[in-house]
Amino acid sequence: MNVINGMTVVRINATPNAEPAPRQVVLLVTSDAVLTHQIVQALSCAGAAPSASRGAFQLPIATSMEQAQACLKRTLPLVIVLDETAVPYEQFDRALRELSQVAPLVVLTGPATFARRDALFSFRELLASGRADCVLRVGEFQPVAASLVERHARRGRARFSWHDSITAEETPTAGPPGVLGDFGEKLRHEMNNPLTGILGNAELLLSRRDRLAPEIVERLETIAALAIRLRETIRRLSNDWLQRSAASRSNGNAS
Image (cartoon, rainbow, N blue to C red):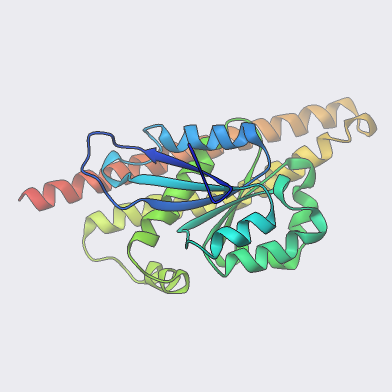
């Protein structure tokens, strides 16, 4: 971990025995020191993506929107992780609009505040267009966030602009390996957003459990638990498809 121009920068070598590769910049915007450590650990751990696709990450850490803007004057990230702790609610809409013009977003928010943020038109628009993903800070959410970061980073390495990458994603990929990889990524992306909404609304209601009948609380807890289990199942299935895709590409190149 280094401090450069007053900003903390974490460098991650996800594959220590691999040949050196250009570092992929991921801007982490959060004022939560514990979360910073968790995200760094999640990106360092194997298993979130096939090892062949993992590279070395450089994570400038901004604890406020002002620091994030200063960082963006010096470097262009492939992905921006925006945690709600770094931006006051009244500035959240502006932060979404500004940061989404630079790179795809992975937004981290608590279940109690998800409904308020989901009411913002800009937030819904970004989620619907695929320019942002939202991960609830519930349970083991860090691997989910890390897998989304790596997914966007893989696209960024293709040297498309963000808008070009959306267009490219809609173009069928030639050959079975590409189809397998696309399916894994699309499955996770398409399932994560509605699951996040289900979980967020369930947790929002559970935060008012003192006003609810016991049987309603029990049903909501079941819904939340099942949503978390389903999200983890989708993540495992998606990773399995990505690994199959990587193996198919490797076998194709060998032949």
